[in-house]
Length: 275
Ligand SMILES: [Zn+2]
Image 1 (cartoon, rainbow, N blue to C red):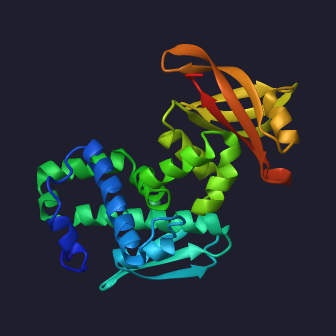
Image 2 (cartoon, rainbow, N blue to C red):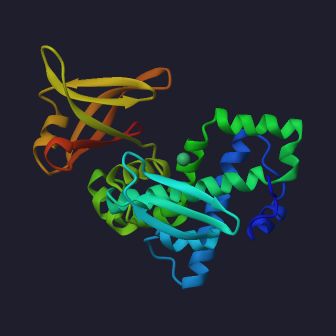
């Protein structure tokens, strides 16, 4: 591999210490994302959202974002001698395109790690495999969230709008990201413990209800429920529900709201274990 392809190579040489564990790699992805956002803020002279992938991309040696029909694929990152090209699916909603491009910027951060000569020795190859084991995709999602919803800025907006399911739409609009991505970010940034859950309508043989994945497990809520009410109306519905938090089952306050229309309608809940 040519290690001197990109002008941004110099960035990594300034990095100290080099990421060695999966936690280090996660922190590296967050730090590189913050550096890129800081650069954009400095360049445009304002800190207000949105932070669009198309504004961030040129700062990371991405020469062009090409919008085209990619079928089932969200986006592709193409490496060239002088930088990168991102191809993004023109058929996806604008918020998804924005997120997909930010995800591809995340892949360029991972390439920076691959270009570090020390990563060619045995010890660091082991670390590289940790990156794979830890899922490169997950790391790129972490980078995308930090790029489009920078922690300290999102936190300020969240404090203003309030940690509530009713704030999701306005935050999504400000940061030009999807409803689901915003809900996950609220849970991550919230000063009080918060879990974001996306429910889809589900029909069992003898009952109807809603299904979601929580802590790797599928959970099912049978109709009638607060979720059904949230699905039927456009208002936020408050309720209580028991969740397994770690090893204990806890009754938690939950706020739920329906989003989308028709067959793609779903419910987002914010769960507050501390309330
Ligand atoms: Zn990816």
